[in-house]
Figure 1 (spheres, rainbow, N blue to C red):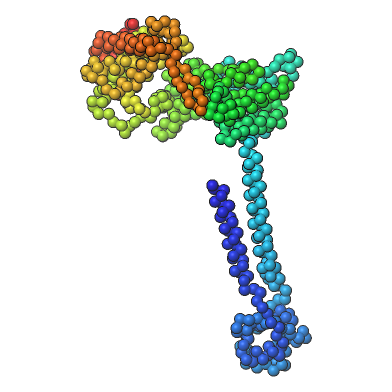
Figure 2 (cartoon, rainbow, N blue to C red; figure 1 turned 180 degrees about the vertical axis):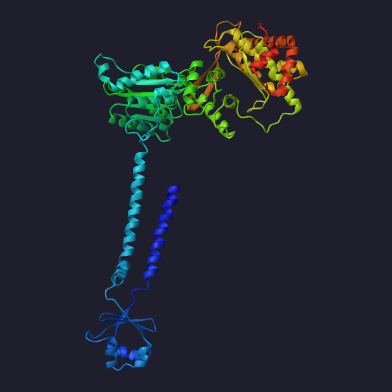
Length: 609
């Protein structure tokens, strides 16, 4: 649209310029009549001459009626003398303005030439402009099927320098990828042993785990051209565009010799093929088919590696994952406590940290945080310190940044009423006390009734150790903790508020997973779920793979889990009613309680089941 407006105004400007030039020269040159000297004398005596311009032997006569005449004077004498000799009236001659000009000035020949040539020149300029636009349009049509990857490494326009040293954790993933990098640098070492480097390497991990960052590091470490493109850039409305861009991408990579192709979010084009709206000729499927074909065409000695990333590997087509294509899959997990501390050190480089900053404590407070989350925490802490006019980043800024990233910013304009504050205090105290007196539950790190995001208050817990496998007793303790706020409200006020809605939703979802996914109910080691079948014209029919009788049993099991968790939480709160009151009152006063003060209030009591 902007290009169209620009072209329109350019055409209008050309026509305005033409009009101005024509108006400028429209009165020049005028018709000039030949005048003899004797006739000129007669016209002077009659008072009809206004001005005479002398150009050497040529004379231009300007009459009172704005007409122009041309005359010749005698070369041997001056014009005045010639006119006097022919009988001009000297008094009349004095009334005429006589100007002697240089002969053959630049304007005497340039202006007539411009008058003749300028319309022709402007016309050809206008034609050239139209032809240029036509060529540009044609080139854009052909460029439509070209892939536009971002080029890293040698010859790349993007100069961002990222190495493996800039990435914390992911030790196993780095080792796997270093082998690919070594192959690209020294292919002969592998080929002599008959080894084949994987054609495709798939990075699998949750969002923010470092897949794209790891790919950028490969580009710098391998020192080969690195073509980076997103899978969504291949998907277009027009048939054949996606497959054409795949072909063009591989052609560019092959012209570079040894190279790496990185396709981010490959699940956008690599989903399981099925019957779509347009049958087997759906554009996305054609793009996937072309990708499979290009990967099959990579030669053993070609030195071309395809790297891709996704956080939804279950959606990928099996043909994409078979040996010979993406036959190496590298899983990137969320960092553990040691890796989080390492990541924090990397992101704190170049930032002025105060002496009281303890990155180990920050790593303990951030279980489940990805590398991107930790980078955001450090950045938010720097912003908070700058906002407060500090020259260094202190521990309190980093701790506050954790809460901000986890729950959102403080809602200082949202002031709780006295009643709401009391409800929130008892609710959060209920969560904390139930968790404190269940040995399978995680220890409480912080309690607050300061509104953040959508929460009126929150209770943060941090595990004493990293857990990869969870047991049934741990799930039951978590359910009881979730219902602790609900039970505390019921015990204190005799009714419940809307503040427990999210807790009830999470507890119900956990109970359903215990029954339907984990086989931890009395129904036995059986999983129950829903299946989807993609029908004609893209209509999905969703059906259950169990009967109504089983559905009724599942509902009863879920209800039993919820009731048992409620009774367990209520029993703890009734026994610890005094601690509940003291903790709630302290929360109303201080609004935020850290672990040390919380343990003093509950008396560091031993945990009981």
